[in-house]
Length: 179
Image (cartoon, rainbow, N blue to C red):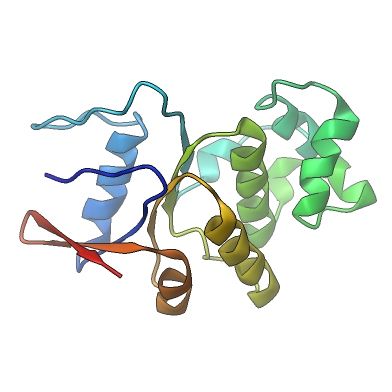
């Protein structure tokens, strides 16, 4: 049992990454728990960054159209602004999403989370496929994000910079530590 507060940035660590991925899928509403329960606050909205993102990009949409479907504002210029922040310049916006590299897919998913405006981010291995500059940008974004983040990553430096708490999952128990 654990409670996540507003502005908490919690790193989930432990030997079983499949268990953490399943926990994140449950918290994101993609899976149902076998037992137990969870409850989100009434004012929370969750943005989920999955470890396996292949389903997200299994279509013929171009990047701008793919991102527009997650935006309340359907203006292409507005959407291109979010892509520009994630280093998609000019003609990159007309690439088909199914041909993107791993790093480009990660940047698209981060753009999706930003444009959705969720106040709780559930991030399962967000630094995979990112270069050093993109990881540094993500660190700064999450440090300055004035809401809740729960994250799992093998990048200890990233976790040390971003997180305010560590949730150690081992032997079906969660131990929460400050730091």
